[in-house]
Length: 456
Image (cartoon, rainbow, N blue to C red; front, side):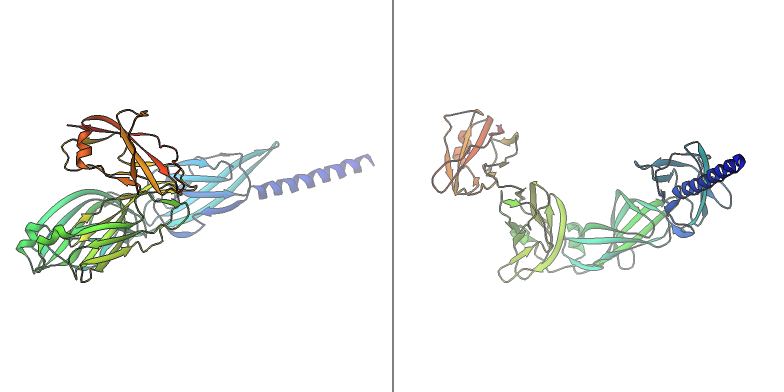
């Protein structure tokens, strides 16, 4: 009887041991991997990602985890874990080789409650094949430009051969239709093109005045030759061009008559966070003329457009994309005419806020801005619109705190001193501030004073 009880206990112990061991091995199971097993066309900058069912408390028997199958040569890599210890990241220290068969060889030794177990798993993959090859094309492919005119184009680079390329310089060349070079210039640049990706590069093309005057009515190519190296330091070049007809009927004397103006939003407008910003403009210039331009939002070109002025030489345009006030802060928008001349409007600043503005925020001049006494006109002082205000009071003083300052009534959120008043200020440091005025005549709180300077 005694031996039977011992045998039963031993059987139960073995049963639980086997179950626990199998459960533990299942606990170590690999849930997913990137790349997957037997995946092809894997990029050369691939980071191997291994995700397990539960957190790992593991040691690698061999720190080399990636091998070339044919040569059995290991790949040096950095090995890191996610914060929850469930994911392993294996980052090769150098790009993988093209068209090469690799294996990720897992050999994990785990320790848990005095039990030791080894988990082994192999994942095979093949990298992308072929030498780096890339084509480039432009949109549009053909344009008409007057001498001195600008036009925005989009260069698109499409990788078609596998690998990684970095463009490092660009040669801009003006050529006749038979390939004879007329003029050229070079620029340093950096543009990275990865496996099977398309990269776009906005840029402006132009016809220099001295070149255009000689070739009015001619058709030339504005070519760009992009040069760089691939991941193995092989040199490559990508050549593309825009067929360009130089207009011969443009009177350059009218260039100064072009004027872009942002009509919405108004300077200092407060726009509720999350709403759509109405961005509109008016372009005045030569009647019946095609105009190309773009918006500059915080100085960044966006929303390229084209249109014709009417019989009065006017073109009205709005930012076609819905432009949301997503983040609080102060922003600026301007309009740039690219062709037939290059002219940029005065930027208009506006404020995005999640709550109403109840006190003036001073926007221009910027703090500590310096003006020259000999300037030909006085600056325009601008501040944000205050909720419910019907007018404002404006003052300039020599001291930050000055109870004797003289307040001037302003109907809008802008004031431009007359040249006489501006000249009477003299030189030195000055402070300006604003108060809102409400319909009942009540005057709101004064804004914190902002400093500016006038020197000789």
